[in-house]
Image 1 (cartoon, rainbow, N blue to C red):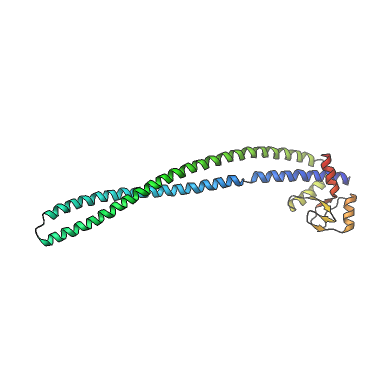
Image 2 (image 1 turned 180 degrees about the vertical axis):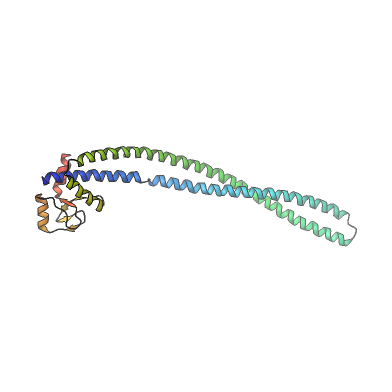
Length: 244
């Protein structure tokens, strides 16, 4: 009777282990998907910043061009004024105004030229980043679809495993399955473990020699005195696997 119960618990544990693995895979986002998503978000943010800089710089460039034209008109008017001055004082004032306008015009010409170069650079960068964003977005969506297909297969497997487990658990005495569940929940999903060299492989604690002998004899369903997991002889696991 104990022999049969141990075999049942080993099989139940195998089902629970597989379910744990499947559920873990379902909960996990693959590193490749996460990395692509992160790279996409980084590129998108950089692209948005470049677009903002481009828009602001374009406004500055337009404003500088308007100011430049205004200064040129003022310089033209000042030049005409210079020709009609009546005395040296007016002439000096007109010359000073001309010099100031020339400096302003020179600065605005440099500003508009530099802005035009930077606008061209930003335009190219935006186009490049937009293409990279689209590429990463397409890759992310493809990997996401592949993950969804994989998840569906895992969902199907999990549903089948749960159904088979529920049916199989009904063949085990309820008081045994109740103890098994309490141990499994308290001990990281592992409720039964082989004993090797008088050591429980569940908690790696050494048990008394006679206790290890009693486990091998299978006269009673024994539990580790330290972690409370059910214990069995490792030969039992080999027999169960070969008969599966």
